[in-house]
Image 1 (cartoon, helix red, strand yellow):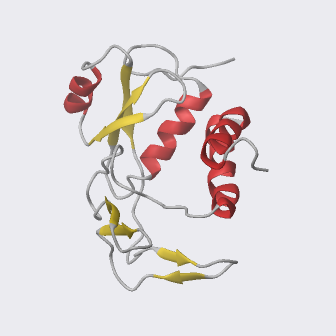
Image 2 (image 1 turned 180 degrees about the vertical axis):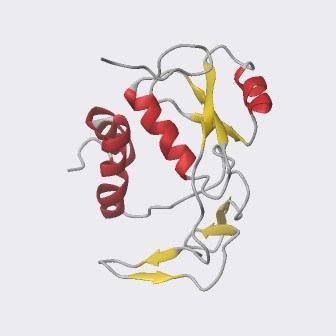
Image 3 (image 1 turned 45 degrees about the vertical axis):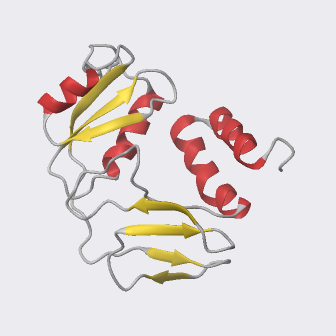
Length: 170
């Protein structure tokens, strides 16, 4: 016996697509429910997240390669969590308060980027808000590659690693 889970266009969702959508919904903890607009081709990139179906449906109709899925119920957000700072090795330090923006400077003090962190209770802007940053090849290998392997497969993770770290990186 089998079953299939379908997106708004009535087509079955692949296992990879569903994994990707679940990961996006997990980033919406604290919302009662969400609908996720996504690209219908691998790697099923999220385009936007909505708290009700009508705006998700409208956003998905904007292009032929988009669909939406929902409602998904992300679960409660942890109270009083402000983030962690990890130093080289295995030490993590809780941040003392909520972070709204992360500003990155180059070695001369010039701004490289100003990145928004989704405020508690708001839907993330999945194209622009940040959830994490990684600055070393070690962090890519410890966190990003295992995550991508789990969600989108080993081949995709290997392609991304080669793109980010160069084809000669081991």
